[in-house]
Amino acid sequence: MKTAAAGKFAGIDPILPLDTDDPELLPAVGRFYGLPPEALTALAPLLVTRSLVPDKHRPIMGKKPAGDGAETGVEAANAESEAGAADADAGSTHLVPKKIYLLNRGAHALLEADARERVKVTACGVRALERQTQRPAEEAERAAAAARAMATAGEAAAPADPSLAGPRCGYRLSQEGLPVLLPLVGRQVLRLTVREMRILLEHRGLRLPFAAPADSNEAGYDDKREALADPASIAAAAALWRGCCVVALRDEDAERLGLPPLVASDASAAGAGGAGAAPLVACCWRGARSLNALLSKEEGRAMAERLRAACRRGGKDGEADPLPAPPPTLRAAGAAAASK
Image (cartoon, rainbow, N blue to C red; front, top):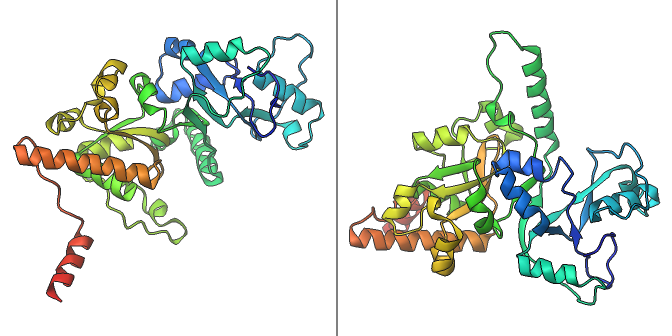
């Protein structure tokens, strides 16, 4: 694998190993998503990246000595940028992976054996993590919450927003690599009812009913999407940290519909029946006032159709409730069309 920022073949990005010593990378991901440290240690050699972007929040404080030959790809790229790369802005900031891919051991061994880089690699691995920058408004809100917490330390004041109390993490999970990482995720998991999951997939979002009025109508924004209604779902969503999360059906609902439950999402269960045997899970973003699916329209439609098919089978066999009623707006439109 390359240890420099430039590839051998024109137009093809190099394959760079991760800087496993960077505290803002894998350790931050592990803290945020509850990944076991031993699992991160095992996965670290199999994680690679193909492009680096400057992190303006982390300036380079000093120049590392060159020539020791032990730098990783990220460290070498940082040293080259600091020494006077073409991009002047990147020269004063830390470079971090934009996307992180997970290889299997066979592909990793093949890349390691290609010391002279004779193999032209256009794609490798599955996308496991993607760089996610925080919006300036959310960064300001997080800083204000931290300042309030420091100012009221030791006083009987109302606690700060718990969704802002989580550790900072610059990466979100990717739907593509979620089946591999899912058994390791220990937190940021939300279980929804069948109806809530269907609405989330079809409309790619749900409104959070506990959002403050100032947040709900910020800058004139009026979210007309349906809101979470189940008390258990509302409580679980309120306990999530702001950022990426995993949304799945509740185990009892998944079993009633004949879908694999989340607790049985190990490699053997998923591999026994292909994609159809994988749990119905989606990467989402928990914001201040809404829960948004990080899915393409095609992915959302495919997962929603899978859920509808399971509901039809369950309703026919009497093992589950039939399909939930459509939203009121759709019912009203259908009644108006029928009256004409």
